[in-house]
Image 1 (spheres, one colour):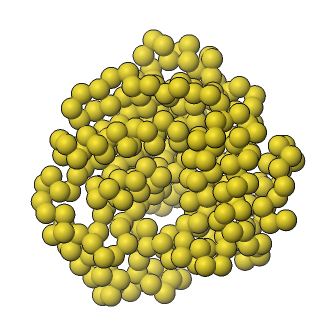
Image 2 (cartoon, helix red, strand yellow):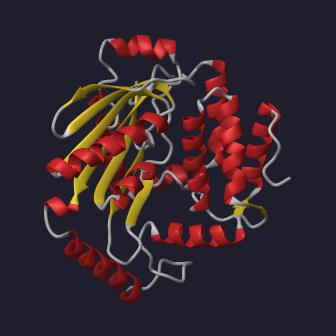
Length: 333
C-alpha cells in the first residue's frame, strides 16, 4: 500500500499544507485544528506513508460537514492522577484530542517516569505513529493504539467470518536513539493486513502462528485503545447517537528514558543496535539496505523536502474529490 508511485506529479509541502488547511476550514474546523489536521496528514505524505495521508481527508471533511463528527469540539479532561489523564473528545476527529493527550502524558512521564493519555468518544485518529513520534521527539519511548466500539462482534450472518481476520486497529511503538534515526514501528495490529495477493485466504492454514499472534495483537490494541478509555460507560451510547462517526477511543503510553537510566547511554546502545542490523545483516529480498522501521520514512522525507511530494493517482484522485466537494483549487495547479 505504501509503495512509491511510478507516475506522479510533484506537490510541495507548503502547497499540500495550504490545500488541506483550506479544506478543513471549509468543513467547519477552527483555524488551529485545521492547521493541525493539515500538518499531520502532510507529515504522512512527506514520509511516504500513503495509506494515511490525503486519501483520508475527503471522508473526514464529509463527516465534519454532515455532522457525523463534531467540527467545533471542546475536548476536556474527565479524570486525572499522577500518571494518567483521560479526555472526552466531544465527538471530534481523533487527531485533535489525541495530540492533547500525548502532550499531557509526556508531561506526566517527565515527572513520574511513566505517563498515559486516554481519549474516548472520537473518530479515526489516523496513523498511531503520529503520537509515538511526538514521544520520540521528547526523548521518550512511546506506544499508541486505537480501539473501536462494537469491534469483535461480527453480527448475525449466514456464515461466520474466519477468526483469523478479526480486525486491523492501528498500533505504534517508538524508541529514541542517539545519532541514528529513532525506531518507529507504525502498523496495524494484524501482521498480514497489507497483503491481498494470490492465496491470501489460504494463509491461515499455511502460517497459522502468524495469525494466532495477530489475533492477540488485535485484541490487545482494541481493548487498550478502546475499553480502557471508558467509551463503553453509560454516556457512550448517547455520544455515539449524537456523533455517529465518534465510536472510537485512543491510548498513548509514554516512558521517559531518563527516569530509568542516562538517556545518552540508552541512545548509544540503540545506535549500536541499529548500526549492527544495517551493517552485518543481509537485506530483505528485493531491498538493498537492512533498515529498521522508521529509517525508510526518514529517507523519503528528505527526498520529498528536496524535490516535492510524489502524488500518485491515488493522491491526485483524493485531491480532486476534495477540490470538487469544497471548491478549493488543486495544489499542483
